[in-house]
Image 1 (cartoon, rainbow, N blue to C red):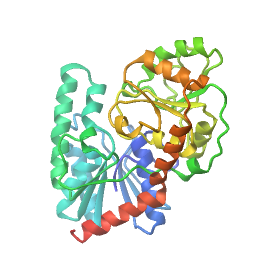
Image 2 (image 1 turned 45 degrees about the horizontal axis):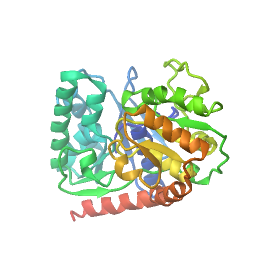
Image 3 (image 1 turned 90 degrees about the horizontal axis):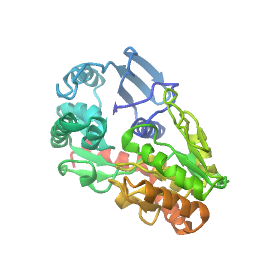
Image 4 (image 1 turned 45 degrees about the vertical axis):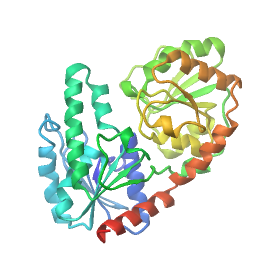
Length: 361
């Protein structure tokens, strides 16, 4: 398994690393012998760990202009490790970081890549202007190379057009795993508490929520906004009723969701956010934009608003907090959809995939 992965003992930050760790643990529990190769965090050295689910190799990935160099320094560092492991399957997590290795390894073993985000949208969101457009075009080129070389592409969204520049030659939809902690927690919502978990990246839309919040507070004076997973280095927003907490593990995040009157996902673009499925599993009502993949996932299981509209976002939050919108059917539909995200379902799909590509079918 190659891709973003948390350092053992460190908190899991970010959806892709979170999803990969859950999958690795589930596969190990199912009897799969695992070796994980991941980029070392910035400033840390290469290191190898033994964990209860297998060996973890952290590899330096700090070379400049990696995308422009077609990920060559990363590929040169990782490929010998893949050869030495002599795996039956090489599974890249993330279409560029993990996918570049899976594409190279196609001549050694059965290869598969899981696509979680949208590399083009990430580039455009992170880099404005012409530089962002150039990065997006380069990302498209790298992604097409990966898709044309791996045996199979796994997408966490059922529609490849949401996050890929071209249709893969072989494609399977498998959702992300939701930790069992989210299915077992009991709902005890605090009246008018809103939960946001997206951090400070522009693509997650906190600035839109920030603009909407004064309107919410005028309509619901006692409303509070919990910012979970808020970076330690980021300043606390100067808004009334705002509370911040740091990175949370599954049990703590499940508890936060259980206490939320409402979960808000104001993103400018999402493919298939784990938070959405986690809220479904807990039974928390959700207000989400229709950005990207959520246009297909959220309807009937969330209150949906247009992206980049603070006024629409504020109106929907107020409607849910005041009971003007009944979310009973949204919650029921969400719980039904969450069943496909259970570990045994997702791991079972992966075992079938591995068996098929090893046999060449």
